[in-house]
Image (cartoon, rainbow, N blue to C red; front, side, top):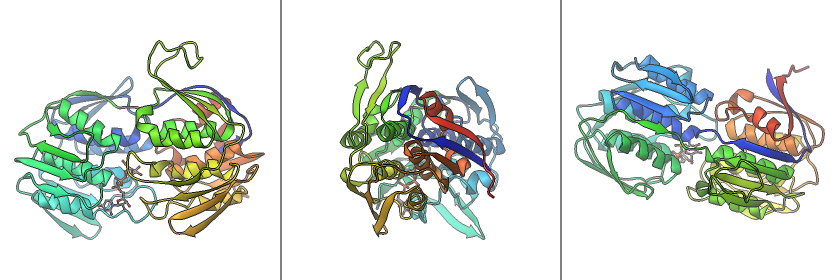
Length: 435
Ligand code: UD1
């Protein structure tokens, strides 16, 4: 089985360019279906979830061509098709095909979408909202069937600001008849990216960046060129890696405006962060500098008291396992509270195998007493961000850590092994055979 072999204890040094955002790219790729024209999506991360989304679009008849850093997608010939298989069931974000299919074809048949095993992940908010816009849903064995005689605008107040539900409503509303208003909409930057793409295709959306979105439905949309913004979670991963290991790194293109809560936590843990806004800035000490985030890691991270995940602009749930990994080697005791997903503490068990002192006070609260040094062990990633957290723990640990379950990590990171190696980490990807 594929594995990362990591020899920890090396401070990180150097520069890494942050890839395009997974969670921004996926709904934008789904949205290309709405136009029936040519769209070019640049800075698309080369990750398995994107490959799956491209596969779904091709199965519907879209013509897809690779361009230098992304894809050119022509959805003129797309036809409705049943959506099933690994691309649907293995990837939660395939759920945004629901809104896209209904907007383009007025029908959808898809297997229940999967994704990382971080809780039950119901889709009631998506279904309720789309039903309000004129969709009738039924279930045929494992297949979800949705049909409409025509989408119409609606007043939708979300019970929770779900990212996926907000995306699906947006996708449906831009081609619906009349006005849709979403109250309590998610404000995550990925929603802004989707709005930005849809607007460049001719959609009319007001309130972008707020929790109240007003969408005036159009008859048609046109093709557009869009550049996917940098991935705030990948940038956060390398920021925390440097916070855990020490050293000095420059995170080129890191979307620091979207990372305030993550930067604040890294600073509490002892990192020194400096934003480089200007391409000509020389403040970060790297000769050919550009916009991004310069980070100086501490000799040893400090405990933080308490950290709690919440919706944007709060501390992101996708960074929670990585915070846990760094705090496991920090000086002092911290409490980590998860408020978005249940079952997002699966990483605790492998961290314990590496000598971490972490206990669950309740199903949503973990107490971490930092140990002077984690120790290398063979551990298995059970989901994407938990897998990245184990890589960080391996970088901090004494001796060799072997992280298996790398396929999960490849769903969100283009090249975490190579990036960290370029920063001086002793990490190689290879194979591991259980004896
Ligand atoms: C997206 C992100 C994921 C991130 C999450 C929260 C993508 C592909 N994934 O996931 O990386 O961790 O936002 O920032 O963009 N819920 C319901 N009913 C619903 C929908 C959601 O109860 O119909 C609950 C979920 O179970 C969860 C919470 O709402 O407890 C947040 O879910 P949501 O914001 O929808 O996250 P995703 O869109 O799945």
